[in-house]
Every structure is written in structure tokens, then in C-alpha cells.
Image (cartoon, rainbow, N blue to C red; front, side, top):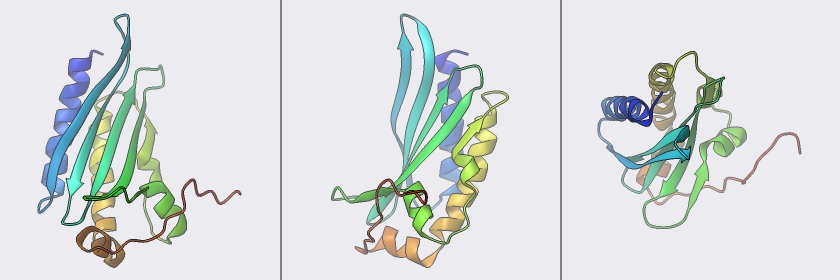
Length: 153
């Protein structure tokens, strides 16, 4: 698969994000390719979903390995400071239902990234609807989320 095909898929992801997150400003902030001497190893795109005080950053990454891994790294960041935290760390300390399997998948074909992302957007919409996430996105409210949280420590 070539990089143009990946960017077409990412264009569809951006379009879907705009549909799912009406009322937010949804922008692509970066596209990137990982290639060396003409060999494509992967492509990525970062989308920001902006609210009044904070934004949600989604970093979609496809790799071209035989098992076709697709991952999404999500972070909540402040619009005016360096405050932020990874969503995975937040979910580890909060009793919130969220299908974490949507953050990393092995794909049968690369277009499956669109289906996985649509389901991820639905999960994210449910999370955004929670009272705490509303406070985080629309006020100066900040919580302390431990970095590198692991229940195995």
C-alpha cells in the first residue's frame, strides 16, 4: 500500500471525526510518513478536537508490518498551557467504561481502520458526555493524572 492510500484513509477518518464531533472544532494538525530509501514503514495523522479550554488530540498510526497494526494515542491537553495527560492513564485511575481494545488493533486490511475509528469515536463521545470530562473541556478545572500509571507496580 502506498502513502497516498493511507492519506485517503486518514481523510475519511477526519471526515468521520467532523461528523461525530459537531459543536467542536475538528482539525488535522499533522500528517507524517515513516519511510527509508523508498520503503514505506507507516503513516500517521494527528487530529485535534477543540473545546473552549482544552482539546483532545488523536494520533492515528498505521504500520506496514505483516500483522498491520493500527493504533490511536489519545491525550487531553490545555489550549493555553502545557497541562495534559494521556487518556490511557486517565482511564486507569477512573472507573469509566471504555473499550480500550479500540486503541490498538491488528487489521485484516487497512480500510478496517475506518470501522475501528468510528467505534472509537462513539466511545469517545460517551466519555465526553460525562460530567468530569465536560468540566475538563469547558472550564479551568484540572485533575492530577499520574503519568505511566500501572496497576502492576
